[in-house]
Image (cartoon, rainbow, N blue to C red; front, side, top):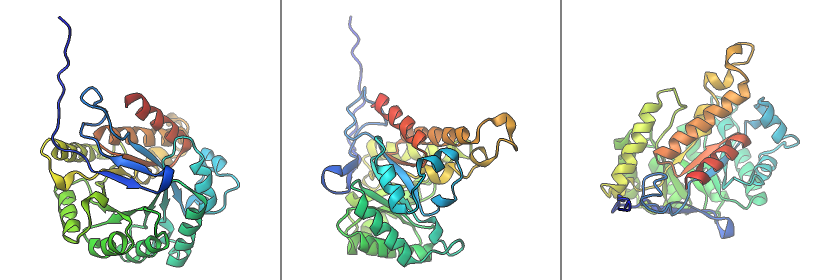
Length: 313
């Protein structure tokens, strides 16, 4: 008697969100199957990989990153170099130095960088702010207007500023919008409902539900990924059917395993290899939990995660 596999169909489906324009546009989400469960159904759109282009990249000292971006002095030059990587689906601009508590770069300077990047790359653009609510309200609105027509994704609208960011980014500039919460399914759903009440089309929303470097309370992130994806597919919860983007680079490059020198921790081995391992392990965990896109920093991480996705899809 031959074996007949029993599939697990779901009535719910993740929204398909298009980023970018033209032949380089990508679609994230769209599946009605658990992550990498190709034995149940085909994966409609394989997870996508973005590479971080930070305005603080000049401060990076990791040898592999310094070597890769050698000769690149601006965000636009780094973005053009990163876009040429075979496995990169989108470019993620990270304006960490706009933080008033840090370098406090002006909105005008950040807008100029974003416009310069948009002129030299053809792949979709994702924009991250500086995590300061007041500054991001102004920053994201200005960049969204400057990148009009690019169909970019702007991270992130939060509970504290969703009205301001939602109105300026999604409604006024017709860009895609990220909804950011921290490892809590109820907060994620509530924010999505509030954005819908603001007349933001749910099909133009991507969730950033929070992550953590593996080993740093990651079980909270893992359970949130699982619960959200099951609610979306198994319970057909329309308020949790937005695709998920995980900004892995933000959480993995600051932990001790990624920053402690070989002199300080000789038993741990090469610092760069440790940092890459943290980024890869976290990205793989996020993807198996339900992330539809990840943002990575190191070219070696990008290549490894692309192989991971290809072999499982």
